[in-house]
Length: 349
Ligand code: G3I
Image 1 (cartoon, rainbow, N blue to C red):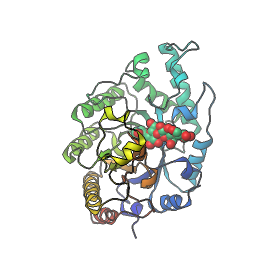
Image 2 (cartoon, protein in one colour):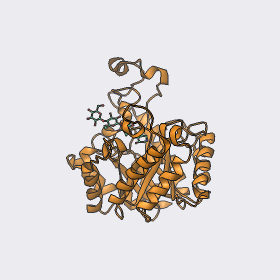
Image 3 (cartoon, helix red, strand yellow):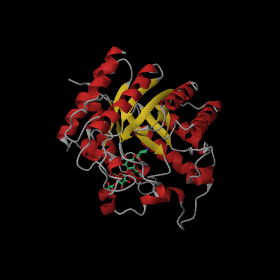
Image 4 (cartoon, helix red, strand yellow):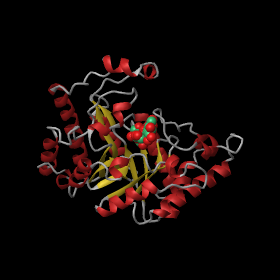
């Protein structure tokens, strides 16, 4: 039988993101699969700041505690996602009582107290944190988020410093998407070096790897692994999935109604995935894992962004109601045909 965590033993952790039903073990078949296949987990949503601190000073750790307890019970490598991210951050974080932007000092203080509270709670339990998520744009510049606008580029090293204060033994990661774009790759390397130059620890760089069937090219991915690794940080694949659907142009996203999306060419596989596309998906996945195995001295973890196709965020993005097939396990919890090829590849590598 296919057992991913055995196949990749001695290479890298193989992980999955968990949703709330899985964290609370309401989804027995999914949980059985998680235990059987994976040795690392990350919470897909429940550790984001809008859930952990919905109002200033009011923390809600119910789901996050449960996630950590689940991981400990099953002896998993636990990853915390994510401390500082412009998205899924509560609006109060950046605003005063009149709705105006807070001062730089106030935002730094809020970052410090959020990070200290969250990281110290799971000290010694969460092995590594996505400290800062998605702070660099595709052109390599800093994203003009509220964190950047109010604090400036210092917000990134400060976040790492606060996380290190709260748990000096935890690994600390920078995490981003579309990292195969050369300008973005270079921008991220610069950010990482700016953290290191201040003597603040950063242990890993996460390549999210939300991919399509044709883009990006493998050699650009390989260049990114080498560039990230050249900083001395570990490299990890943190949110792997491969969409089989045509990419919806951005300006269509808002206009296309759910009913229309079901019928038109943007949602072609409602009734199942044709063999030809499954084969293409398999080829793509096998090629990715070839690259990861080739560089397994640099890559410490590969995490899939979901247990099986029915749970993937890709079914609802950027258009609601699409049917996508982006993961390794299908809607019946069965490994797709090419998973056996990935396992053989790993065993023979
Ligand atoms: O839980 C509520 C539910 O109560 C409500 O009825 C429903 C209606 O919209 O929303 C539910 O919350 C949704 C949540 O996922 C849980 O399903 C949010 O609307 C939705 O925005 C949220 O999406 C998540 C997304 O991050 C938010 O930006 C996806 O699940 C999650 O997969 C995705 O993950 C991100 C990573 O954190 C960072 N990298 C990119 C990746 C994909 O976008």
